[in-house]
Image (cartoon, rainbow, N blue to C red; front, side, top):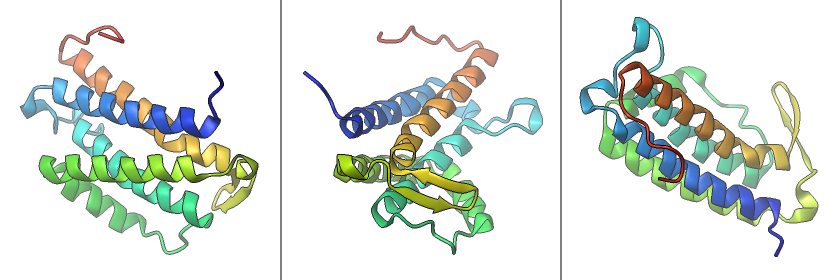
Length: 159
């Protein structure tokens, strides 16, 4: 049985969002907003980024146009606000992950090589649809690294 790239990425995105949330919740509550070495990003900040960008990526997949009005300062403020409210952050992570998963599944196979002009150069829809999975996987690893610094046990994959 074969699986399409879109179905693989949609499923992987959903699973990785759950893994990201699990990694965060594994940390002691008082350490979720802890900044390693005083300057590094907190676990909550990283999850907030993923929650916001999953929604932006869903919009990008559907519109196939970079949002030229993207305001980085506004993004940073929204991320900081979300990082301070776990209930809102968790809700947005679930909502925007569902949007990303749906948008990924909607891409027709023949459109995967369509290029979207990005500020740093063109990217194919195949590359863009992989972004939520990749970004959340990366940040799951970063949060697990924070856990290792705190000597929080990390169960082996699949357990």
